[in-house]
Image (cartoon, rainbow, N blue to C red; front, side, top):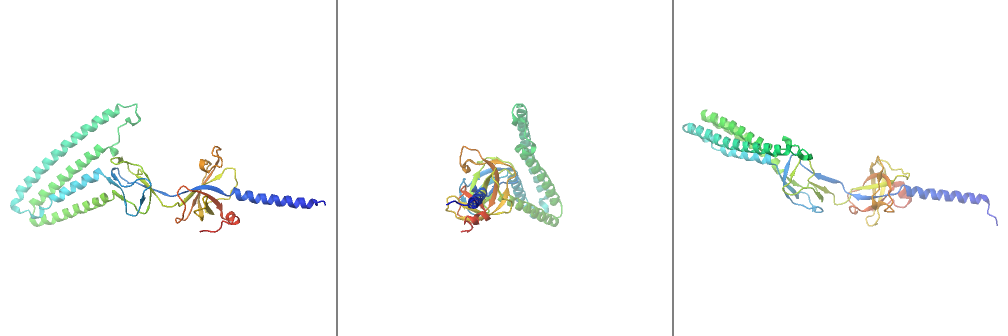
Length: 343
């Protein structure tokens, strides 16, 4: 029995439609890797690392100590203020018969401390000059240029000592004026001065407490970028923290494959291992350039494949593993493939 030509035509159209549907489903399905957002821990001042309390991969809870730091300039100022407060204790109880004696003692103490500090400043400046002269001779090395004052630890110490001298001179002058004034005025002025010093010291103590870095939320230590005793520049990352579970998927769409992925699209994410179930995610980033696929995501590892990156945000509560391979389907295609259910 001869089959009518129309039947062949209908069958051909059906096969073409079927293959087109299958091709479309494949071209809009792509693969990626589950990742977690990373938080870098840094400070806005130059610091020294005193101790590191965590290691990469360690789980931490909110409030756990991560690292302890030190600011040399802050420590010097706190020490100076503490001495000033200790020296101001007896100001309010000085009697008029002791004024001359106390004035002489204050001047002698100032002169002694000033001489000590000036001698130390001169020694540091001489040392700095020798260092800069040595560094200037190393013209062939990129690091041969002498460091700027802003990053010069020696100059920080010099400025701190100069500031201490100024503070001592100012406080001694105030102290003598108080001693030579009336006892009542002396007492009142001493209270004001002490309150100002205590307020400044309290503010510095708060800044000092911030140098003990605590975990603001639970997570996993991603990397530790410093060592104990190391000096760290402002805003350099000291360590990184990541969430316990992946919150992002970095996917890759082949360069030659048509796709309908755009910012804000809803997609379905499925773990290749099938243990993590299916999650609904949202496209939060689409690459504007073509990049090389990671070897892991290539069907043939030795065959280089190019495409676009796509970032997909997924719910924080999930059973995926960090670095796990997943497949990503546009919501419409996922429904056709019976992947539309979430766990």
